[in-house]
Image 1 (cartoon, rainbow, N blue to C red):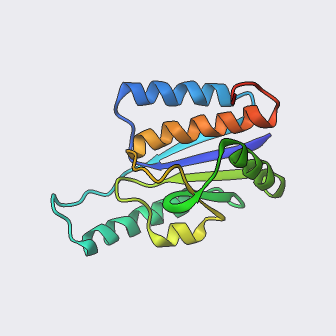
Image 2: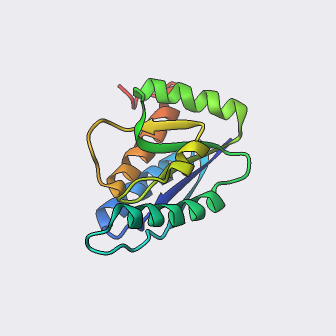
Image 3: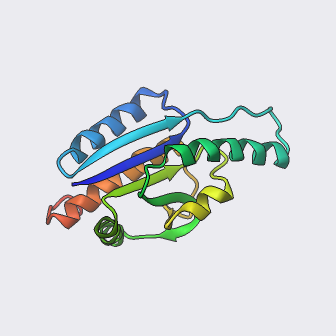
Length: 159
């Protein structure tokens, strides 16, 4: 059984996000061991300069790197990543899990991820060319991981 870690910058506060994430985490229990790690988003001024944003992203990157399990295949969610269909993501997860029993998805905060985290990733994944709140991205990636396992196990959920 594969171990999946989902590292998220920022804490879920809204009940509807927590409920949705909880439902997919429960469903995923049949297919993998999943751990969600929430890291604090660095505070910035109301109108941060590019240098301030970069400094905050660098601090977040340090915390992210410490949270990545040793030997895990890292998948970073970022706008410049590759888009996959649901069956394509299922194939990617199958391929990566054959090489490593640990997968680690990383979702940055409202300013995304520092370049050093993107460089750490084996795969850069984009959910869409559209912009989504990072809390919604957490729900979406959990749903897509669940959908991928259903596809890999011949389930009808993906239809």
